[in-house]
Length: 116
Length: 111
Image 1: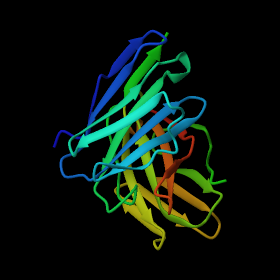
Image 2: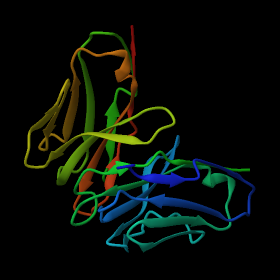
Image 3: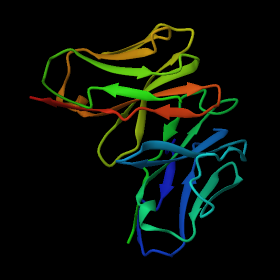
């Protein structure tokens, strides 16, 4: 298996632009997680899906952030409009579990976002 | 508030030493605890997962213990190698289904 795939690996954009991050979970996994990692706040869960349904989006910082999972093999995290404080590494992870993080989570390589 | 703390924040040791990394959590009503490894510029790799009913888990040179009553977990690395150099993160899962991560211990093992 190729593992969790994220694209792009690096993204540099200007403030105010729309940014879309993409994730392909491991085939057969039914839970998908979006995390953000910064030096100041460490790793934080933004949102997670179970069987393509958003379960907990309480970590989404603002209405500028939105996430979708149209099918079991694809998810997007969109920031519109982007701001410099959104600069971080965004990770996607997936797991095979009845719900949430109750089984081992497998992480993608991350997308390093820089907003100028 | 559910918090996870890791001590030390950084550790530098010569090759061959046995190491102990510490993780403490404020709320003992956990579902499970996981240890991850993160290499620079890379994602996280799961090392060990301990269910709340378990006391320890072992994988190769790694052993993780869990003491729920005291809110502590330790990751023991035997006979450390330069390839063990990375950041080690512990994460606690509560019944909210949300993993709470510690800030990590950055380990450097020099030859």
